[in-house]
Length: 232
Length: 239
Ligand SMILES: Nc1ncnc2c1ncn2[C@@H]1O[C@H](COP(=O)(O)OP(=O)(O)OP(=O)(O)O)[C@@H](O)[C@H]1O
Ligand SMILES: [Mg+2]
Image (cartoon, rainbow over all chains, first blue to last red; front, side):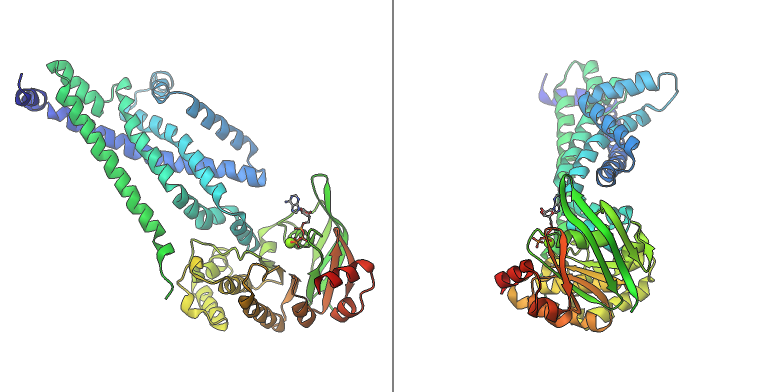
């Protein structure tokens, strides 16, 4: 079989490219919403754990968060996905994409929270003390002063986590979601020819991850801009 | 004269180490108190207890005859200026000054900005309003930190070695601003090693050693006629 023939069979015949488009759509959908869920929940967990460390408040919540982070980080992502789908939502009729978003979001939150927590702790305590003596409360301190600086400092680590998240969605096929890898698998099981389905999906992932890191670099540069302003 | 702040039997320990031992102390409205003493004598810890950056192990602090609790309302009434400036590095000079009055609802956004510009003009830094702290000199940072505290209109301002991190040529501008603030009637408690400045500005000097107040008096009493051996020794080492 010639290479042109192989491409034709894998992609064009029976509109097989539709699988890839469907896979791309689902991969992006899950990664995008999981990223937001992970970031929001991750920041929340980081704040709870930091506020416990500084003020000894929210002890029970802190224990729950620590427990949560330990479990998520200590078990494989694909297992978490399957437990959420086959155990927790076993009896419930629920969109499988939603389960994907939830599962990857919950997973990412644990990693994000550790990154953000390290970022918060990297800010010198002088600024916290200044905010304290100006009458700002903990949430104002975090929102206006600490988090903006913390996130800026850990942006490279967060970027890595987002890229990991994007790639990890490739196990969503385990609960029947047609994401990119599953799509290539479906095509290949029809044609018995893995070459183009796998290569094309690999290239798509590469474009996505490179694009994402480019985007994060831009963001990093934008956030650093004020530091470069020359004194007039 | 009216007692503004009263400290009664204040103790502070870090773990097993007692850093402050039975401190009793009164500040009247308009007082300029300077605290001196050797390194490690507990000056910073004492100052930090006054605005709850450190929690006293024992004892009472009364503001206007009411016992102080660690709450935000009180933080607003006691301003603090730090050795290391502690400006918010993600905010411009103007934002540094206006953040607290706006967020604590002390002033409206408009009022805060007007007031901040007035204060910036007073220290001659109005053209720096949109600059980030990284681009200021040490002396400029500290002067901005002082007006950031001033805009909250505190009842007392605490200064912990405000000039110790500055290059020598910048010390004067900060001391000058502090004198201006003092002349406006602000009650101030200052930890400093600048003894000439202390002599000029203070109406009360406190000498601390090993966590205790060893001697209190007017600048003349403390600097010209020290009574205790420890103070004499301290002054002879510094001069
Ligand atoms: N957070 C802390 N934990 C443990 N020990 C502390 C802490 N803060 C201060 N100390 C100790 O308390 C003592 C008094 O410290 P403090 O900073 O109040 O002294 P100081 O008079 O301000 O000294 P300096 O002139 O060097 O600033 C020192 O022995 C110091 O090591
Ligand atoms: Mg000190």
